[in-house]
Length: 145
Image 1 (cartoon, rainbow, N blue to C red):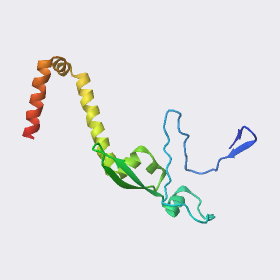
Image 2: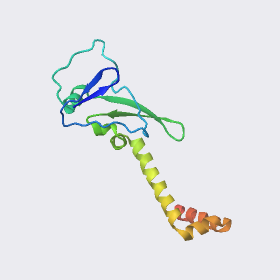
Image 3: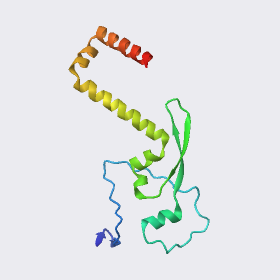
Image 4: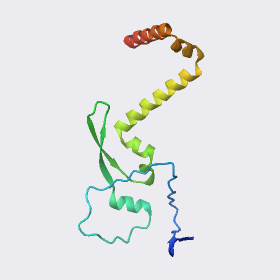
């Protein structure tokens, strides 16, 4: 399949089973070098015929530094062995830090859903006295746990 582009450019798409979809305009693309250093002399590699062989040959990986809530740096290494490793779930699965943040986010969303759907809890949170009593009860339960 060929597509025509502006000043005579033509894209020729290979007939392969792998598919890479276009990034939708409401997404952000993060670009990072996925190897530690650039090669001094570029090499021509012609025996790679599919994505699996490309990943096996180059074995891309990158050192990433995150900053936690206390401002401490957290270093992790991400390795990419297939296209799904570049997605949100693929990166979270490799990172203990991001997995913990994802679990915390899920818990906050769950609490938010409960608060927004529970009328009794909403009325308790709207009254200052009831809110204080609820906070004391939660603190007591936390101490028991």
